[in-house]
Length: 171
Image 1 (cartoon, rainbow, N blue to C red):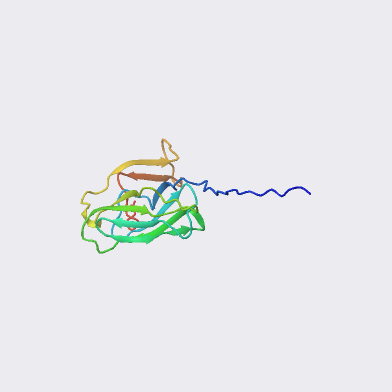
Image 2 (cartoon, rainbow, N blue to C red):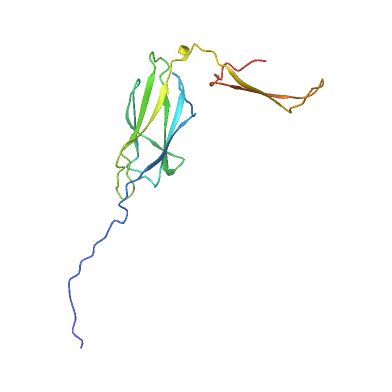
């Protein structure tokens, strides 16, 4: 009979994921240069890896109107994209810049984002712009030397600033 061999050995399970998740983008929709009181803004944060369901990113908004740390919602079941719907207070009485900070997210291995990521959004009061928009270009399609009665012509007017949806240009 062969002698039984016994011994002691250790098993070490290593967590191979030691990298903290990184934010690749923070997008505001609609993408505008300036937002107004009452505007609805979707804030979407994209990560380079899946975020654990029990550690969603937290969003905080500071500036002229504060939003305390709030968990973001996974966008359409995608664990790399999280969103937050923000409506700017319609009764704001001052202009300024909002700082949007994203923090606290962890991946499934427990790695936490190592630094807060920020983006800024500028808010102006609606009636403080006292300079009328200026026409930058007017183009016609098709371009012809002369037009005849009955011709259909597309007219494209480009302005030097955004035009409010409720005040479309008139011909």
